[in-house]
Image (tube, rainbow, N blue to C red; front, side):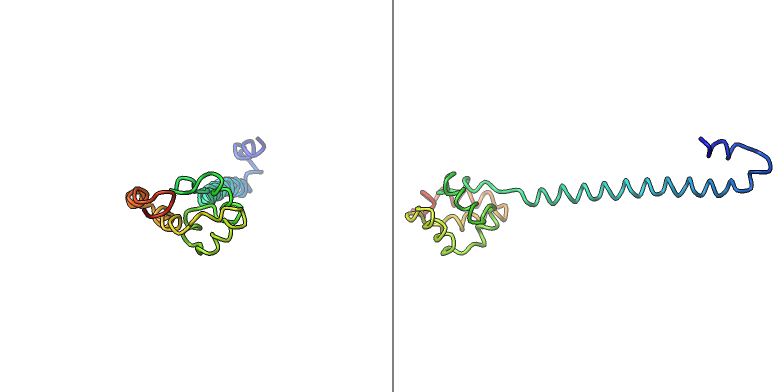
Length: 135
């Protein structure tokens, strides 16, 4: 309010009015810059959060909720992580959980297609599989 009174006055005290205009412009510039920075950080945060979303490993042929949980506890929670995993490492996780009869080779093959987003290829492969194994 004081700023508007100063700017509206005429007389001997108006020689520093330009300084008040500069300060006001600087304030509004900082507000706009702060808004833009916070908006950009929010967008980055959303992108980072979207990047860490877990995939539904149980959607792969041969993987049920129990196996998906075992994989998650072993550090494999996305299609990309399963696609990059070594068959022996996955088999060791299964063995440690008492699931020795499972064969993860078909899961890794499916995960590679799912990680690339090749839905048609994944569906064709899943039609050829039974319990995650080639028939």
